[in-house]
Length: 393
Ligand code: NZQ
Ligand code: ZN
Image (cartoon, rainbow, N blue to C red):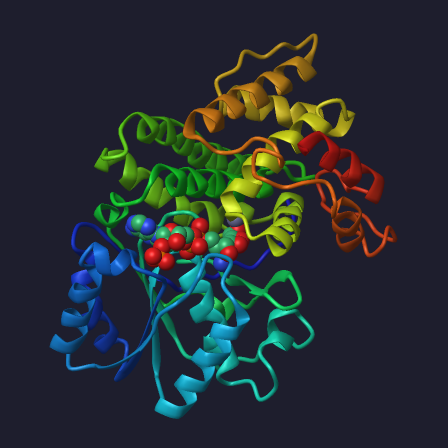
């Protein structure tokens, strides 16, 4: 096990009508002027917008609004939010939505206290300071895990770059989780969320660090629960018990509890951010294409095969073939692909409408023009990435 620090100060309020406590909770945390940040129409259509405003006004909080966050959230709106916070002396940010809305708030939160352009923070050129506007959220889409994570991901639409930054101070101070709010999610978004949270557990699980049994078992518990309840939701999207399990899994897959004491991989997320920087596809859809292909690619690598087989047995219920663990590892990939296919997610880049024209550029970006490798479970050289992209095509 590797040495580690772990600190997570997010207050979780989980249950039916959790959002009604927004005003009281924010007031207790010292808020007086709140910037309400959201995306498109979904929160107005569901009636959540009205409910939140009522809860904030009842607690006598002043409210300003920043709508218009889009999936793969843009730095241009982050800049607008920073300006608004400064002009209006906003002292709390409230994200109502999914990962894109929460990430926008996180970037505004640190950007408001940074004198230069916020892209310098996002792109890692400058380290974030210790001052930030606290962020709270009402989660409507279990997926990114941003409701308890210490990072955010933002795109610069003009540069076609999607990247992120983090800080231990970036975790939201309050997350309100009501699984009922996720019943309005279309199957495609539900599926994108399920593969994203599964991927968060997998990025940590597939680690080169040995003797991490406790966190392996925790990750397996999360992943098994995701797989089981994802299948239930494909059969019945209105299953509130399954929605509740999935919501909790999304938070715990990404709050880094299972990442303690181990080197983490994150190759697939790096690759997906490259792809969605260029093509603006849903984050989960990109992961549905890359993760199974990456597992297939590694199944014949001696240092990877046993962990892949362990995943196949413990998470996907495959039988262990001790004579031929590669067969077990590949059986796991087949089972994963079957689940993803059933949910309607793409399994190849062409199914996602993406061609091969930027493969070279993607591989160069991930390896600093071929000068370094990427990932920890199996460090991928430029030629490996090109071979993987061909497999994903
Ligand atoms: O804009 P509206 O109308 O609200 O519609 C949204 C949006 O179009 C819709 N939606 C959300 N809740 C809904 C709903 N529709 C119906 N009913 C509801 N209850 O869903 C669409 C997608 O929303 P988005 O926030 O983009 O999705 P998600 O939560 O998957 O977030 C994805 C973003 O998070 C980043 C990704 O890269 C991507 O940009 N990530 C953030 C991480 C983090 N901060 O820790 C880690 C992740 O790995 C990920 O990279
Ligand atoms: Zn993700």
